[in-house]
Length: 358
Image 1 (cartoon, rainbow, N blue to C red):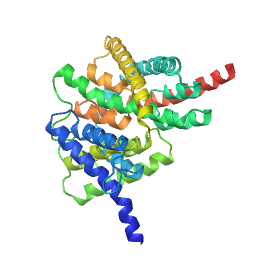
Image 2 (image 1 turned 60 degrees about the vertical axis):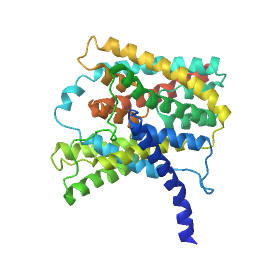
Image 3 (image 1 turned 180 degrees about the horizontal axis):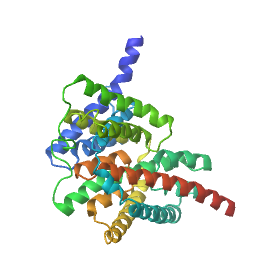
């Protein structure tokens, strides 16, 4: 019986990975940007919303599995850390001010959209308007009496639309796909073959995953492994990087994990939320581009790097896009972490103030 229970528990995971692989391969063949991330997300998300069953099994991907592969991506990002990165990080204070402006305007803009047009109650509209901090927005919204079902769907829609639209925006703008048809050339080189290298990278992933959560770092499952990987690469303990095959698998798992989170949502709810999400994301990306154009008058940084640094998507997904554009992933990730911290802080203070005002 325990064996059968284990098999039954693995079947939904196996189905999710199979659907993700099919989606990734098809997306790669038709030439989509970021094919293994977007293909997995679109196919698993569609199967989840359609409540697809194969021999009674529905696709499902538990968060712990996704977290392991997010940690792999964190290790990969940390592997890009080198002394020259400090030169770019020295310019980060001005973009940080831009992030502050972006968060305040986006929060106000989204709140008015969800409250006046969407007809959401005040807590749902407010925490659904947060341009960052997925888990934090849901937790704070639940405590404030928001409709967590709608709030969760609205926040997932924000991330999904951003990570789906950005690669296509760059494809239209530059004429080049974000990432390669082979699954995005994210790393140079691969594992050297030495067991020590494997052990060091595995340790960075495992210890960083646990330690990041223990320290309550923002986006801890990504940031913890990234910090440890950056340290071991900076001090020369290893120069190895995860192999391309593992990175491709990580993209599929991350995409499938996001798609599987739409389980349990009704199609009627999804239609309204996606319409509001499209308007919200379009407004935020327009605001993003406006701020970036202003910042470029003072900074010698490429437009695409700054645009991704402000984009209100998931930290992991935007970091993957940044890597595929050969942007400084540490710079981009730092600004995204700052966006989450600013969003959570401002939202918490602002909502308490609004509550006092009645």
